[in-house]
Length: 535
Image (tube, rainbow, N blue to C red):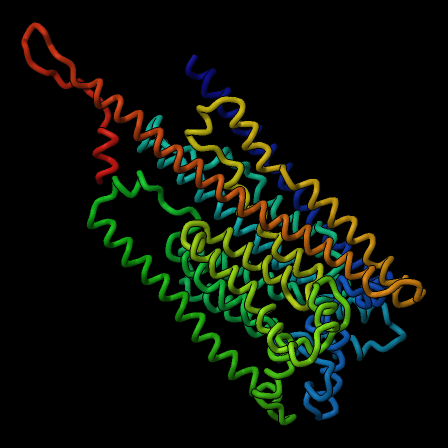
């Protein structure tokens, strides 16, 4: 009988491994197909039509402007002469070799030249997917370890923080980004927005891993400062990324902290503080190094630090180009009187930063992944030059940080159908509305652009109405994430209160009067909830 049971276990294990291998092969095939779709779109001549779309290209991430800057450098002029190039020098250094090879192929081999130009963008998307896969894998492993520790230490009173995490989460996270139509079309259009997404994803992965040192996380985040025209996002993400490096992707529970000895806690606190400081040091050191490289990169063309910062960061702040896009700045600032312009510039740029600071105060230490995703989303929604590539960048983190919203605590597992129904509604309350709004806006944007600019039978109000709907849909999505996090925290609080009340009742019942001996006898019972709260 023992031999039969062991044989059955081996067969079940082999079947499970075979199933996982087949599933992994299917996910890998989807990823390869998604990358191949990008190459095919460029090969069949869709790069130029897509690059001209306002949803996919903006003054701060356009491939056409990169080609203009590279051509100016070839002529011995500063790439920031005129008003064409508005990306930092590091981006131009990265893409210039590919642009030279594509130009060398000439017009006779235009399809191959387009593929060469798009090669770095396809590689960037592959790197973003790899970073997301690694992040989700770290999250799943940490969640499983956390659940095992709680199951052993807390027995039936453990908080079931995470639901059963499927092994397909890393594959799903990577495929969700690669198969997102926004990321596919942005890559085919040659948008450099994937650079920012890769830097954030790489910084998050480096912070979650114990090795290499978290100084790499700070370096990746500082790199984002020199490949995008928005300085606010990297500066605001320093705290949640450093918190990830300090506490890990799954913070330790309160009950687990109570069972840790004082000496062990002191040692762990010192190590965590060292990791936090290493992240900050890496960020500052990389900023200095990349700032020097960016300034000296085109010194032979007499490009100064002031010149390239004015053409990138100052340009993005001052809205030097009011070409219509998916944001709301272009329409409002086209209507504002000149003497009010500076005031509204400060207000519009400070508002998302102010909201981000409040969010970091609330969730920067307890839910750093959520904070990273929402801070990126806020600066995309309220940014001056948003594109679909930016939207796909922050949506890529959603499968990971929203996973915690679907998990069930001990309190939720013991409540009735009404509360379970409410929890289900929290997860799916706005999903259809947001998806439908994004599809509608994606359909109407090119139509209203054609009616306004080409057919000239409409005006700017048509396109602005679509951008407002796009803005409202993303705002609703952000509000739903924050609301889910608030309800999740409320479930935690309810769990702790219920555990405390149960322990109080068990402690009171433990003391009974023994009538025969005339004294009190203490029964075996768990520790009092009152004593636990005092500790």
